[in-house]
Image (cartoon, rainbow, N blue to C red; front, side, top):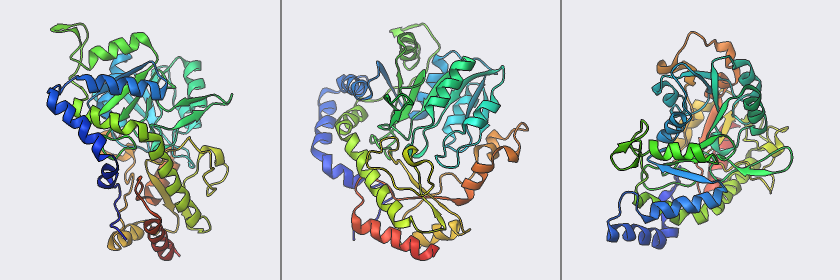
Length: 387
């Protein structure tokens, strides 16, 4: 059996080596390192894939979130509601811009923002909602958009983990994750479903005026060189990374399908274990351990995250490492408990789901190169230990 990786980027590269190398050589031969042709070509390709009017590439996913908020004109003290159970970048940029972060609990099945908690958190100072499509599954955007419309709020989708996922609305129509709100953002960090070989990110919107503003912000506030019309930053996707992403984008759907297939294998292997709660998708949200349906497209499994309910999560984490099975705990500390974001407004009783998840979740290897032998070894090792 080949060595198990948490994310096998080397194995994936071998499958696309010629295409990627050609793109990189093109950049080297033309020396168009910044804002070169491949950046514009990738931007156009991604706009077509997402069916969105505007993609604004930038340097990383954190910048994408910050620039999106800057573009919306949010002002110091404005409240921005987001989920407590996620990576710190989401709340980090809110604090950096001197906005007021408001953290709320998450749904016990999807780990995405809890709609009832969101409703309760709205005040006259609330200006925006940031739903995080955590681990690859789209949040309840029907409800989020209804709430936003009712209260005249901006919606900024944190799509760093769910590019390629679809959201099916109540009326049966579909949109790609990140293209539903006023603006969406993503990260192209190497381990993402669509990842480059360094840092990268992008912002999506169908709003022409907002797109114009965002294009100025990413380039020092300039539309004409040395004329600064808005306050901006320096955040650009370099041409080499754009070349890598352009090579990978046509394979994104197949990458997501490979991840879903691995997730189905995991779910089937653990389905009868009373001490393991497996991921659930929207199509089977009434069942905590149901199968992932064959037509599933709302979840792209950036992470495959279990809950270990018998108190042995930390022991399992160590046991798997001893057996050569990489794993991770996303996330061991809730944002409301992080030193940087503690606030007297928060009560522990506000976060029952998050406080349980940080004690029980564990994420398993998840990538496009997992094979049956590896999956069998991983699932047997876990089942034997938890039993």
